[in-house]
Length: 381
Image 1 (tube, rainbow, N blue to C red):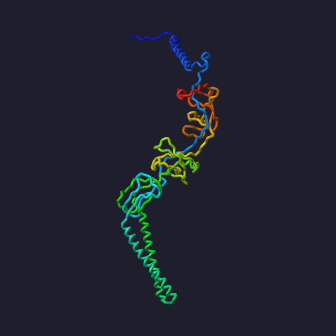
Image 2 (image 1 turned 135 degrees about the vertical axis):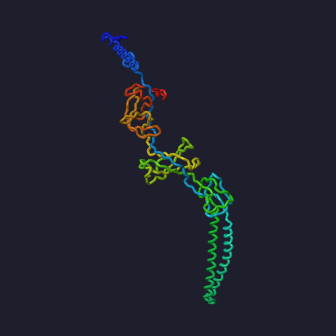
Image 3 (image 1 turned 45 degrees about the vertical axis):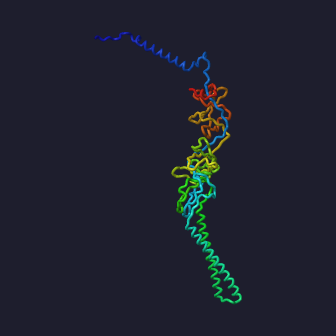
């Protein structure tokens, strides 16, 4: 098979390539013109206004807060237990119920103490009788001594007998008082009002001294201990407002007060310990529950506030677009406190000004804008 060579002139071979390049350039220009919408041609008119959603910068209260987590604790907690052993004859509380201060909770009985008390009371009655007789004998001895009708030795003996009898009375009275105190300790009363746990022993059981029968909690108020980062240590005071939230009441905030600020920062965690007190008169909150504390460290109510999405971040800070006479005007701003998606504007904006909230990607300084009321339209890309 013989080789064939293209013997056509070089200019004729380059012509199709040049034609393809020219056609491609024309197509690119057509596409670019269509993309730009013919903005540079007088017959098409000005470009359409950018659709945006705006928000008014209004003054409102905004706060800076720091959060900490912890557990709700009873402000007082005590085990109900006897100081002397005995058999339980009465459990006078409802498990899980409320008791009042001074209310009888448990009564115990110890037969040995009762027997000792009865014996001492009988001995006291006899000792009182002997003491009275000895006092009469001594009084007569004093009379006879004055008349010189009794020897000094007999008088001293009468005086000694009287003192011994009186000492017996005092000793027995002390014993009886101690026994009665022990008997009183066998009636256990609530030292404060609160809620009592389930019983740990049954009625009729014998319990030793110190055995826990139940636990009493004072749940009004409650305490909550938590920690915050070290950097807030210089800004916290006992006057700061505190709000407590719990999972059992979503969306609800409970007012609290700081009552303890740790004098030192924890070296390991670099945190500052705090304790808040929460009023709980209705008993809605329960000890042992997980809670979040929000401490307000600063509050401002004199600055215009915007939603965070109205801000545009730059290398030098933030800008916003303010709508003036139907156009977007670029404005540099300095921000302040942030709270729940809102930010205060310290400089660059006045209250009442209309700011682009959604649709920033469509505008630049001087762009005509069309304001719509619904975020869905303004959010169309």
